[in-house]
Length: 381
Length: 224
Ligand code: B12
Image: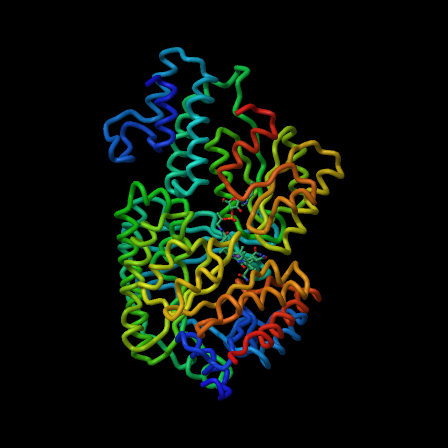
């Protein structure tokens, strides 16, 4: 394989399958040459143009295709959600009230949403009491048949430039935390565990339907997921991670693995104690595997545990791209290659997407250095 | 076991009251609520109940979280037990020279929407006996300033999770200093380091929410 130059798609796929490609693939997370095209998120600020260009030309493209209904909410005609907006104290933000009609009475969640497209925050979670759990679960659930035509269109457009992943979105615990909030999740872990499991069971059921429909529509073979970072240490113990994540995600991913698919997992946090779980669950690729102080495992230690089993995608700390100099970036890339590239199964990638809106000159320079260093040090010779 | 030790132990084990199902092995046993009531009936010194019972319990909890023995659920449950105890003490504290430990005004700096860590610090400070005023996210330097003016003597807590918003933190600290406010400032968040805190002239920094309680006490000159 070494003598042959692979296409970007084959190179990335080989790494994801823990094989050794011709060189280490480079993925610039959150920067995609396909942004701005029909149906995709709006293009980034013009200051990103040189980075988008370099990404297009020199790196492997990664893009997550999201099905039209990704929140696993019901499509049942009686499952209505009304959304109203009202002004709020927070400058530049509106208060958005979502009311879910349920056979047992309405449920409400309040969010601050930006008028300028910035990320928002939840003021009041949808589920705050055990009665709310009953209400939520009483909503009749209906799964909307999946229209995957857009996936094939995008894959066609991407061609050999990289991998289009089918996003299964949040995993069951990610959904549960989305509606419950981290604080209630933590407290209920001690006193109302049953309620958490009832919600997990329901989101598992819905996610399983989504995956089944993905597989029958033949999207794939790479599936992206996230959400379990809400349950990693030090927030929850490895034991709770096993109960909330391992138990569910392992069953959820099994049909994907049976068909030879790869599950790409995005999970911040302290991973050391749960890496064996990810291996057991059959994760195909783990991003971003953060080193201390952000995470708790050095890249070479992660490699020792994951080699030949799970591809590592990481772990250039975004903070370094924003604050360090060219020499530091080059050296970090060299060390990452030294520690994780051996025998394949490694993709060089930053820990997060760039911070909007503007890409400063220095940060742009560091990103370009990151790509060049990746090309210089990433060869399997 | 003396009543103060019992209160402390109930805080450490997150036992709120006698009806609470948690922890299961203490079913039917009194929690912080009953123990604090008992201490008041026995005319114990209120400041001892606060400091040697509730607050010292939370200190143990903080240490257990920092060392990895406790996780978020344990810490929040203990904070609830502490709060329940505080709400019983509150009416008795009013009008006396003993007050809550002090006030903390906290917020995530301008441009930054991350609030999980900041909320956690707020809950823990409340659990540690402080009054917390939470300004939310995306808080401008001017808003920190006006709140610092409105609450003289309060400690100002700032959180930043993005490299870019570290600069908002710097600007907020600078504005407070420029205007001559003497409020102490504590900073934290994923991208903040001790070196950065020193550089911008903040008075304290911690990565560890549990450490916020002893640090804020230190800033207010309260002996642990
Ligand atoms: C959850 C999360 C989000 C959520 C936020 C949800 C919410 N309501 O807060 C969402 C999805 C919205 C989000 C958005 C973004 N995020 Co974000 N996010 C995270 C993540 C995964 C976890 C943060 C978290 O909540 N941790 C748990 C809490 C408890 O920890 P903590 O905040 O660090 O707080 C602890 C201490 O720091 C301290 N502390 C915190 N505040 C304070 C304050 C005081 C006074 C004190 C004493 C202590 C203290 O105590 C806490 C408990 O011990 C981190 C990764 C990471 N490893 O931190 C990235 C991370 C912070 N995000 C990042 C980025 C880049 C972004 C985005 C730009 C999008 C993107 N490209 O991913 C946007 C920006 C939004 C904006 N304008 O603010 C980067 C920042 C990189 C950088 N150096 O700038 C990080 C570090 C990921 C990474 N490793 O690259 N994010």
